[in-house]
Image (cartoon, rainbow, N blue to C red; front, side):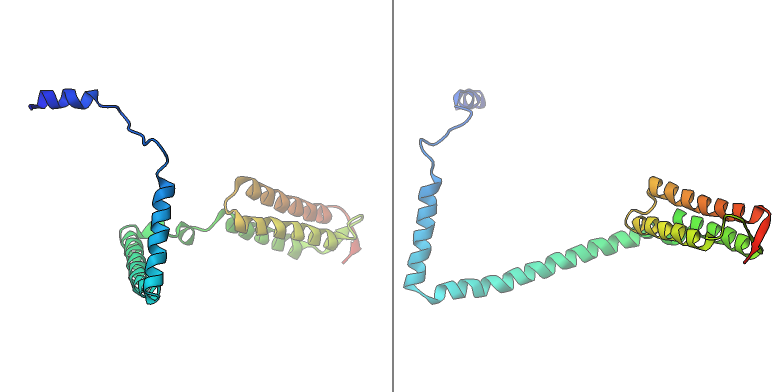
Length: 175
């Protein structure tokens, strides 16, 4: 038989051959029966099988762990700058916080008197500080999230604007 005849014979075969019935129940029953016979014939066989399987699994686990460690070590050696980009450059939240704290400290240091209608300015500042703390807590879970950063900047601007209004008007109450 040459190659041409073999190709013709193969092309005439059915693409899939399916058994007349499901074979798995028979196979499963035979496996279970063989396992039961082995256990009843040798009660220590089940213990011996698990005793030899445990060290083998343990060695495979150690090998997998060492493989992962070597891959991560190799990645660290080849790409040292990709592991912590935030350590090299300050986050947007940190830059906003530093700028805000400088401006707030400047305004509070220049505050000698409080305008009329701003008697509870310290309580209002505490409310803004609580809101800022909540947004910063959310940023801990979602760093550099644009909407959270915008909300944080808005709260900072509101608080600075409030302090500016409290000090720009004619001071009537001295604090």
